[in-house]
Length: 327
Length: 260
Image 1 (cartoon, rainbow over the protein chains, first blue to last red):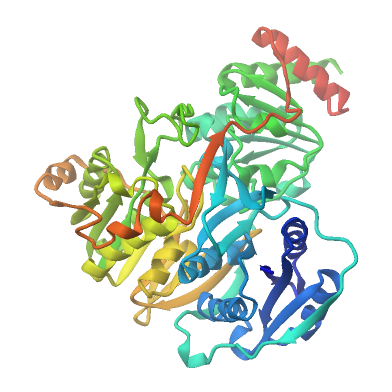
Image 2: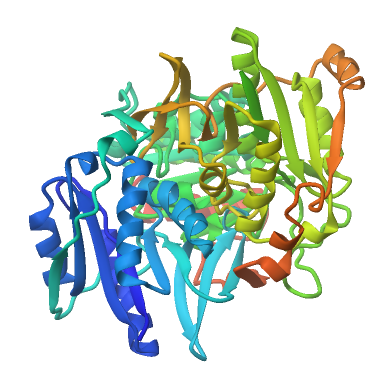
């Protein structure tokens, strides 16, 4: 009987919810293909977390504890994960596509000479075969991948399925596999939070955001900001705008910027890359204005306008002003 | 210092994406290509290290003839040399096959630093850089938002989630994949473009690099069976009509929300 190995992650002292999402995926595959689910958790002083994972996720949990695993470094965690791979001999290894997952999973895959399916939103079993679904072209198209042979390594998009909630029966196996300090090349220095400046979009009840479609920095002042002001809201932006230096980072909405959930979100000239959608899809009401009818933003929007934002937005600004004047 | 920069040429971000007859990839005929956005930042970072001290910057790309254009652009921006791995046998490789090809180039070049983009704008896998580091036996880090030299090592700030950063030191040789927005990417100057005409592009095949049996569809451990337009969910209610009509409908919606 084959096995599936879940690479668990600890965040803020507890097993990350995304790990339990991996448990959901792994259990589905295990049931369909008669495989066992195992997992590995690595860190320093992680006895409690390993117990927690065995109780809530079930299966055999390999706990790898040691000083060199206090902070994530690719060297130390690769060493630990590969020790667990040796112990479990899995034919599927699952990571979450988090900063740790995207750093570590491909490297482990290369070391195992395994196929690698990155950032998948679904994992299916068809005729006993593993099928991976993922987005390509920044969310504009989907791809269906099939593995040829085993083992396979995959990373799953956090939030792609519900975290496992069910009965579980597990056990913890301590694995003496922390790497010696002198074998490590990457040195952890510190983690810190980027300074938050000025704009706190998370408190705004209305946000008008512009994307690459706005075309130039001065157009934010001329077109986007007036609508935000007319509505009494704040201005936001997508990542390409900030990368291009059109607006500072504090305006960025998305997984690497601010995650917002206003009453109204107006997306202008934003195609809707996943990293942006993650940051705003919790909004109560979303209006999207974009020239491209196939833009992924229309999938999460409540109301869409397929048109040139330079025609619609100024007209909307004017109409909002008039409506307010009449009220 | 010798810096190897891996560049991928990808369909232009505004290119029309039509799926090919086999359903396995997009139709590449007639669309524009560009250097992957993330890789442009990697190249710029290499050129900044070169500008600040002494470095040789070698750009490497895998792909058909069209890739020459991107390599010429990179040379025009200031890269010193280019390696173009051109071999139809490499088409259909998985990330591991590409990483093996680049590792073979790295073995020939012996760089102190490899810079790449975090991921490519077409397949979005972010797989090749860590794989290449593993195969080249180098430490690596991903999603760099700041790269500095510190005590003979590379000090890198990498992006985590929600505005958090992680600082790590990597001894050279090492590989760093970079996030977009790391720097402001320069344009190739006319002088640069003229100078680039004298710079060499080495063309190599998989056999030249000794990886002929490790690339292409036959060696791939994972394969794209098909690509397709995502199934439409409920999606947005699309408003139609003249600009004036659409705007009035939007105002009505905003009023319904109690925000006007």
